[in-house]
Image 1 (cartoon, helix red, strand yellow):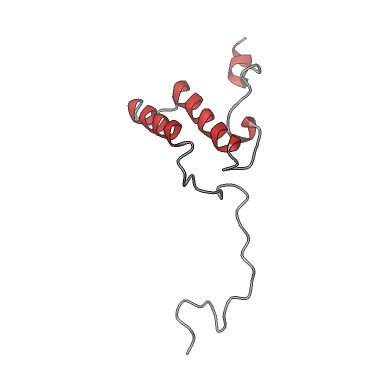
Image 2: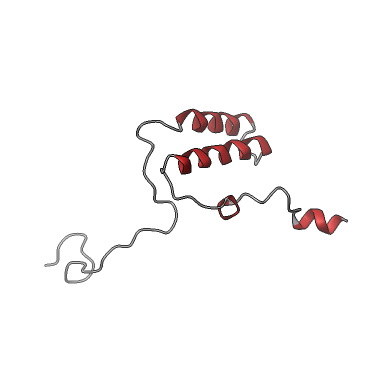
Length: 95
């Protein structure tokens, strides 16, 4: 009889690997809690829409986490924030 929850006939021998993104230390000391609450309030106010004000708060939150080593430092363009000096494709197509 095999062990409950065990795939196949034996124990799993592979080594788990962490995800590339999404795995980071929790903010146990609440260092960025004020910015997080401000963001959640903004999202609630705009009913979940992708509002520019909320995006700026999200950027501040991520910056706070990076400054306090709660997540790896990364370019904002890799986190879904376009460079404001570069026009988007939709803007350049209208011209």
